[in-house]
Image (tube, rainbow, N blue to C red; front, side, top):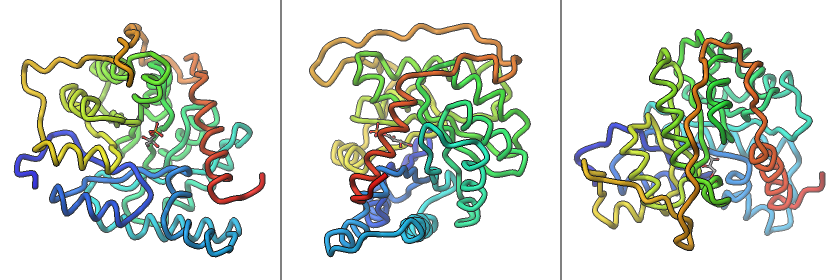
Amino acid sequence: MLTNKPKTKILVDGGDPDETLRVKKLLGFVDGQTTNPSLIAKNPEIQQQIASGHSLTSQEEKDEYRKIVQTISSLVGDAGVSIEVFADLDTRAEDMLAQGEEMFTWIPNAYIKYPCTHEGLKAAELSVRQQIRVNMTLCFSQEQAAAVYTATKGSKEPVYVSPFVGRLDDRGEDGIDLVKNIKTMYRHGDGHVHVLAASIRHLDHLLASFALDVELVTVPAKVLEKWASSNLPMPDRDFSYKAASASGEPLKPIPYKELDLNQSWQSFDITHELTAKGIQKFVADYRSTLKRSA
Ligand code: E4P
């Protein structure tokens, strides 16, 4: 069990309350949880229902999602539970906002996840005005993080932005560089956006996130279990992150950009191929795991 809790808040990246409980027993705490449609579809109870031949209606799916986050809600600390809206590439901000408003009532510690797209940012801008906490997901560029900052300026609650480290690594770019660049850019800001390192695949990602002093990191249970079985190492002053792919190839650095956080969010070029792909993957995973047609 951890006696010296890291400054960075630790969230479990998953969709199964039993897993969250297991991690909590192992570490002695869990600060929060992130979920997404792919992870929820894999929830063992949902899987059991499908295996027994029951195909869920969309209302039943929503009820299951609510039940899962309600169970997780009481297990975690003040970083809350991030609940993702169901969005494809055509979903409009108004639709995302309506889902977000409803999901926000499910639990007292909800963060609503919207994608870092034009419609997602519009939904976020409207949400924070209603004091709905948001977590901006599928962030793959510094421009997207700048847009998150300016779209949510004035939010009374902290806003999360989730740069996806592993998915950038997967295509040969150093995802940790993006996290570092966003942290550096936000140094000139008012502190209302907290960086939540996501898509964490291994221990070095976790240690690099600690070393960068990110406010939060979301981690699959298996990586946290590995961390615990390695005696919960923390990066020391000499820690240096070696950016390498799964096969050991060096990753391409992502250069820092000077961006003006006083610009309007609409003026940033926020398109990123991986954001669009990520939205499509969530929809496809969800439908295929739940054996649902479009
Ligand atoms: C967190 O909010 C994300 O849903 C998650 O970290 C995605 O990770 P993956 O790239 O391993 O799917």
